[in-house]
Amino acid sequence: RKEVEQDPGPFNVPEGATVAFNCTYSNSASQSFFWYRQDCRKEPKLLMSVYSSGNEDGRFTAQLNRASQYISLLIRDSKLSDSATYLCVVILTRLHMNYGGSQGNLIFGKGTKLSVKP
Amino acid sequence: GAVVSQHPSWVICKSGTSVKIECRSLDFQATTMFWYRQFPKQSLMLMATSNEGSKATYEQGVEKDKFLINHASLTLSTLTVTSAHPEDSSFYICSAEKYGGTEKLFFGSGTQLSVL
Image (cartoon, rainbow over all chains, first blue to last red; front, side, top):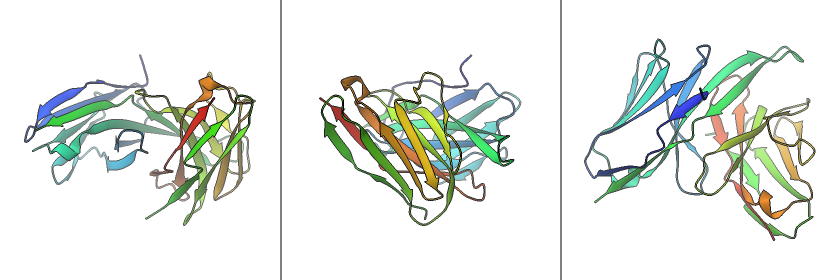
């Protein structure tokens, strides 16, 4: 099983639609979770962090289910400008033996492509 | 907000040339920086994790002698693609984790490398 899995899409939806993405992770010790948005040939930009209690930012809602090891992103009233690839990111923090600090083991999902059509 | 500067934005070079890409955190200290590669229409792939003052940790399948990483200070990491070949042509992106464990990543704007 891959460490972080996402449905690659593409999701083609009309403007105004509600769309949901899921992401599953295999390591139960994973500690931090994020959704990033990446436009074509640009750097990923942080969309939102994901917490167990769920969090909402405008039209975007993220949820974390630790028991089932998945995170979700819901986009309501989708806009043309929402068209992008959405990356699920999981961070597993572990001790770095050499200097006693912590080191993040960063794992990206492959991304889910969203196309919002007029 | 935190800013990461990546330079150059694009490089075109002949096969066999070595290319250096710089990644700087402009307004914060970054204990950890990450280097990624992204081929067209593919996902971001982590190449290596760079910790200041220690050797980089490379992901499986990434040649450490081919992709030299130097993280000499808390604000600068460099990736050198040695003896570049056309198959190394890709989009390379760095990111930095802000010291203090925010666990948020700040990305550079990427470098498009084209090897002729």
